[in-house]
Amino acid sequence: MIALLLRDLRLAIRAGGGFGLGLAFFLIVVTLVPFGVGPEGGVLARIAPGILWVGALLACLLSLDRIFALDFEDGSLDLLATAPIPLEGVVTIKAVAHWLTTGLPLVLAAPAFGVLLHLEGSANFWLVLSLALGTPALSVLGAFGAALTVGLKRGGLLLSLLVLPLYVPTLIFGAELVRRGASGMETQVPLLMLAGITAACIAVVPFASAAAIRVNLR
Amino acid sequence: MNALSVTDLAVSRGGLPVLEGLGFTLAPGRALVLRGPNGIGKTTLLRTLAGLQPPLAGQISVPPEAMAYAAHADGLKATLSVTENLRFWASVYGTGTIARALDDMNLRQLADRAAMSLSAGQKRRLGLARLLVTGRPIWVLDEPTVSLDAASVALFAEAVRTHLAGGGAALMATHIDLGIPEAEVLDLAPFKARTPEEGGMSGGFDEAFE
Image (tube, rainbow over all chains, first blue to last red; front, side, top):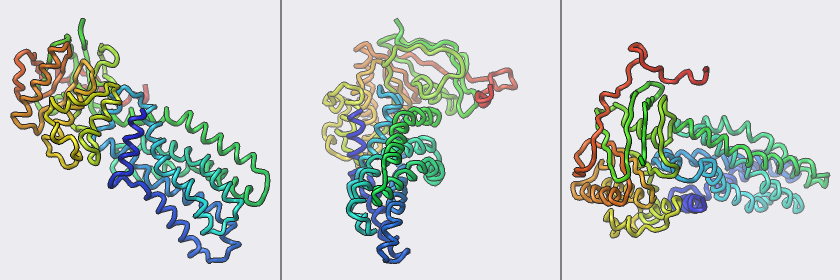
């Protein structure tokens, strides 16, 4: 399983692997917002948690369809399905690789993007915490969507329609956590909900993803 | 002791039954070549045996963790080198060593090349080298010799013969003569499935409603 993780990470950073695309997309979304909303600091700071979370969501979505589609096209998904790794393990590792190449860079770069939106210093801590807790759920749920649409022509668009509604709870509690943290309110409830959603997704969703792949490979 | 035995097997593709009443056994050290016209269901049969799709009826008996499947597509990653591609599969199957596979498939000189710069035949050789690093006793091969030149076919036949001599078994769908005299040939044409109108099975499209 470690071999699969290393292979996926290596593929991501080789030419055409798309590493950093999500991050660049996130940067562009975040810099576009002040152009659209106007440069007034107070307004930006108020909408910053929501914008940053929506941006992270979209950046995550950008690379989802590659999780299984490339392996399906070159036949390695068939071979992985017949390999001694359980398919649930393959799906989990693929989601981990997606998080390491997309989610983790977003988490680490978020404070810099927070500055662009006039997010205050103390709120940055909550932003990083909420993204660190929430983005693994995005990758795991995204892998499920990718598993459902693997083998479909133009599956990417369908994938977005399937996956974005599943992201709603994470988005609500993630943005809420940053908002409450920034204004010094009690943060325990959104924090626990966010962590709980992620934990539940990691525990349950890989089984659904593996089942979806088995059906799609028939 | 049979490596692989199949009784009264029926397989379907896209909801239509393609083969039925199929039975054969494959003992260690033996090779079986599947023949039949295009569309008879060779690939479907091999995918079913590999566990990628459920059989429509019948039993497949195979020891666990014994089979290595090689499909039409080689499953190579274009941006990884030959060595990296092989080493990945070697560690997935927990065998670890790729030196013999590189030598047997004459890939030594290409070891550091990216898979995308290989020719079609060289890619195929790399795909077959993957079988050697799996260390599995039963090879299930779908058209293994496509785009191979005569010398490479001989190289592959030699690898299969070594595998058989070591107690392995091989099941192959192929149209050409591999030059493995001990291989038995199974013609699939007599096992072609009847249509539902002729009293055959329905293809399982309604499985969700049963």
